[in-house]
Image 1: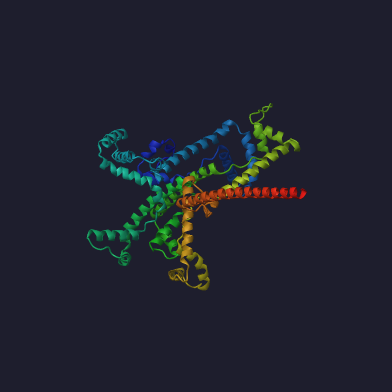
Image 2: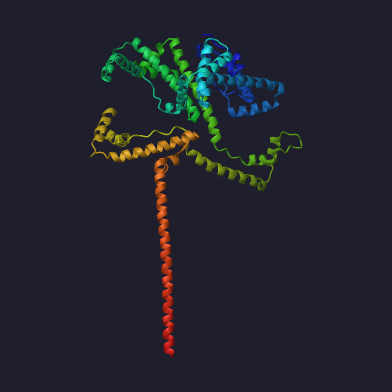
Length: 530
């Protein structure tokens, strides 16, 4: 396998990147680091550190002293001397862009076609034809013309294959959520069941297949292990793209040695950590390189995901408040100093010489900006950017409650034995109130659904909203509640009308009674006078 020149990759366009054969992927990825390019000043500082280290190897470097001296030296440097560091920065920048293209193409192949813009049935058909044409080294323009002509002549039944593929691509989010790692034993079981179906026999029980798997030699197990590994790598790509689309915070990947340990532990080749260390040391250079390439791929995928995650965070994060000096400089924007000095140094000295009363105005502005920022940050801290936690069943909720007490009672027993005891308790309804735990499990399920909807829309979910019981209720339950509220409101409005009418009647009756009493009093007084 031939290695690629880094200088050539700088000038590569996205079209040229796609023409590199897949056999050279490992050699191409080996040299990629995906580290951001360093600006000219940092290039200069690093050069100064190297010079100090070469002259005085024993001398310790104090960063504060070095930064002050470097800043003075950088100001005094001529433009011709600065060009050297600017050139280094531009070279790193070009390399970084080329590396990004390579990572996008090889680690996230179908991201642009399949996930950013959902493809049509014809697009899927065209992509297949283009891949076949690329393998046969045909001209892509001619392949496109032939594909368009062939698509127009195809019947609806023939097109149905690609419409089904389109539906599969539309539901890829659901697929990515349900992905589980495939084991070699699962593939072996699947094969045995298929063989039984072909021979028109009943599928064998798992109890019979498990001992057959144990009897297999290492060489017989290898093809199942390799196939499971390939499938898991494909599924991992799907999960990576799922994380990129939703902006999930990526987890730091495992190193080469850890990946090696995980594989060997799954295949029951290792029992202790010392066995793993011995096996790793006895590995050949070619076998070690395989694990190093795997870990490097995972690291590149992690750095690419983190880059996109940080970009999304910047959009949502509240901006840091400006201090008193920055508030002053904001006002003076566009005003050039008369002396011809640099804009920043001139207005900074002017601000430092201001009186306390004039400075107070900008300090108050900075204080208000800080208060607003702190309020925004409190709201932002309630947002969670990881996937919401999956809901637990009623039994698992009971296990979490019961396990700590059982561990205190029986500290010597294994976890498996304790879980069996809990399972027996769960089956006895008199001992455990299953309805209560199942009710809590349903609440947790509603909470998860609510948070997941919010997460898929925004890329995050809020703790306060997700955890409240009122917002965990489903849409159907909300509709029923709204109906009840409307019916109650109608009934209450009718009652209020009746009450108003009754109160109106009672008031008129009282007035009529008071009038009759007054007339009676007047009549008595007139009689007494006579």
